[in-house]
Image 1: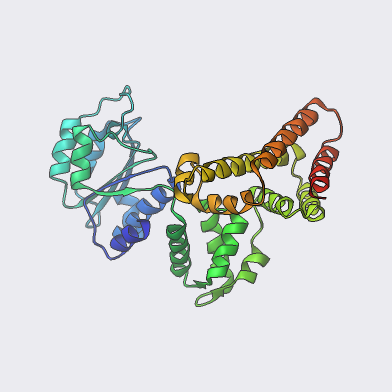
Image 2: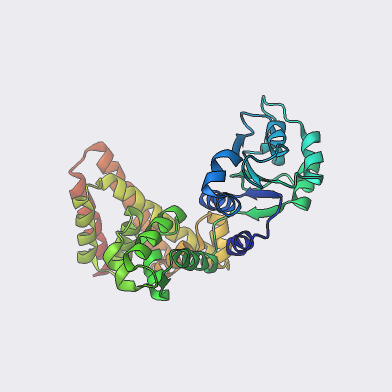
Length: 340
């Protein structure tokens, strides 16, 4: 888990070799940046950090650098990006000396920390070089965080900024800003700066300072529809128009949300749990949790009908049959009449 690995790094329980991979690019970057900040001072960083890309440079060049004594410091940090030879990807034009890499893995330089980083969903476990690396390196898989891990990460981010955060404020931020880590990191840093050292981030702080993303506004729009609060749904739509959002884009996101609700409802009916559905649909578990709540207020037939109506509205918008704003208003009114 990311918080555990970061704790080890901060306490300087360091490994000479790291293998960081997974689909959550933000976590990959944050992890190797933390390593650099922990190992080197600002002055040392200029001379003792090197970055190599295995799609452009042979790995042996990075290893030779790792075997070079640091300049004006005790350690070097070598970042090796895109080490595709650990995966099932085909060989590229660059020739990598994997024998030299094998030798380095079993006997790494004592004054260097070499970090292999790749945004890969999985590695090729059959390869000798992959097995050897996983045996000797500190391995971190940066996949989307489960809800519990996400909350822990958010709390840790706030603590790093010297502030505190209430649980209901965490809920409010997730519902307002979504689950994208880059977005959350920016919002958490901003909130912590606002409350100051030792300050408490409360629900009202989030509501006053954090703007909803377009996707989250569409989620609220669907929420109003599920509760048959069509007048309020229309108001959300008008607010989006005032922010210069295009009706066609809003409709596309509305289609995505209703499609998600249908898929979630269908899979839940088949007996799948929240984590399983998230894995199948490749959607964050927190979004699945919220979608399950919304989907419970519709029948499968209602969801399919809504998807069909959205498709018809999409055709009308693209064919120029009538004003796009009017098409959206009529669509929402259809759902209003359905509720009555």
